[in-house]
Structure formats: structure tokens, C-alpha cells
Amino acid sequence: MSKVVGFCGIGLMGSPMVRRLLAAGHTVRVWNRSPAKAQALAADGAQVVDTPAAAAQGADGVFLCLTDQSAVEVVVFGENGIAGVPGGWLVDHSSIAPQATRGFAQRLAESAGRVWVDAPVSGGVPGATAGTLSIMAGGPAETLAAATPCIEAYAGRITRVGDVGAGQVAKLCNQTIVASTLNAIAEAVALAQHSGIDASALDTALAGGWADSTLLQLFVPRMTGPSSAPLGAVATMLKDVENVAALAAETGTRMRGLDGVLASYREAKARGLAGQDLSEIVRVPWPQKPGEPGAGA
Image (cartoon, rainbow, N blue to C red; front, side):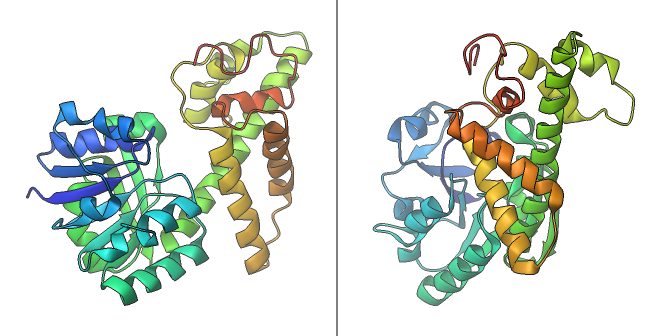
């Protein structure tokens, strides 16, 4: 059944998600802080609007796919924000702190009677483009069910993991594994290169063994040569790892491995790599990597 939805946040992930919603027959009103990114989707049939409130007005629900917690708060509760439009549901695909999500959900329910579902995603740009994203959701089951016909346009798996905020906890578990794995691959690449072997052969050499993974196959070529279209920024992953560390502190969870991973991403930011593709984390253990950061992206 086709729906009318708003979508705020037209970045690396948002654009292919909107295109898949349109291809599935839904009417999509798009808003982005940088209007040109939203306007690029007009040719695909999206309706470009001037404010988040306009994206939500008269829609069955609205989706967010924003950079960080501050952006979510502004888009929902700021001037001409979604909170000014009562009723309906809001599905937040952004990755923000669980406690902030719970607070935002309560504020939105009280101010607008709108129900919040936190539904961060995993699978990156390739997953969004192919419609195979994994969604980990927190919130009322009936609200998630109402939004599911839309979410299925770009997701291959949708799992409700609990009440509001639980989706963000699951995403931080996901990012613990992803950030740690990428850091380990970067260190393995550097170790191979410093030991006199061609690190670009690691994806083939390790294929089929216990070290093999989607990340290994995807990132060894990107870490050892020029990367193609960016898959995500170092700064975005650092934001998530900082949130993991904060949640670990709140819950008294000892995560010794995370300390080294967090140090790597912080060092990458200090070296001016925050805006670069995730593959550039390799420049922390391998500063001598040929080529300029981001070359080929």
C-alpha cells in the first residue's frame, strides 16, 4: 500500500533510500539543510519542500537520516520543525545516543502526540542502494508495523529489539564490531606492508578463513589503493564510537578493546582525516601510505 511520507536528511544514505521509496510507489516529500541535495531527487519524482514541518504536514509519517544528535534535535524541535505538526509517526534512521533518543521521544509525544521509533541502519551505501539494509528498531510494535511497508523498500531485515532507545543500543553494538574490525583490518594491512609483503593480496589470501568478512573484502582494496565513491566518513564512525564509550560508562561495561579503537579514530581526526572515507583509518598505523588522503574518492 503506497503512503505519503516525509524524509529529512539527503546524504550518502538518504538519497538511495528515498529513490527506493519512490520506486516502490510511495509519495516522498524531501527536505535537506543543503537544498541542492534534495533538489537532485526531484527528477526521480520526489517533492522538495522548504522545511521539516512541510515534509511532515499531511504525511502518514516522516523519516530522519541525519548526521548527529544536534541535527536531529534541530530538525524535530527547532523552528519549522516536525514537532509543530501533530500526529503520525517518526522513524529516526540516524545514529545517536540511546538516552537522547528516549528524551526526544518523550518530548515529541508530549508536544505533538507523534510516536517515535528509533531505527538505525547497517549495510552502508551499497545496502541502501540494493535495498538490503538491516534495521534494528526500538519503539511500539504497532507503530513499527505501520511504517514497515515503507521501510521494506530499502531494508532486507527489520528487527524490533525493544522499546524506544533499544534500536540505538543495538546500533552501538553493531558499531563496536564494525569500528573494531575496520581498525583491525587497517593494522593488519599496515603490518603486512611494513613486513615486506603486498598488503593488497590480503583479501585473497585470507578469503574463506576465519578472518574473512564482508568488511575484509570491501576495505582491503580501499586501504591499499585509491578508494572509489565514499562509504562513510571517519568522523561519523568516531561519533558512534564515542557514544559506545559513553554507554559503556553508563552501564558499567568493561570494554578494554574499545579503548584502543577509540584512540585510533581520535588520532585519525587529529591528523585531519575526519571528513575522509572510512578506509583512511589505515593512515593511523600506516602514515606512509602513498597518495593523498581520499585520492580516487
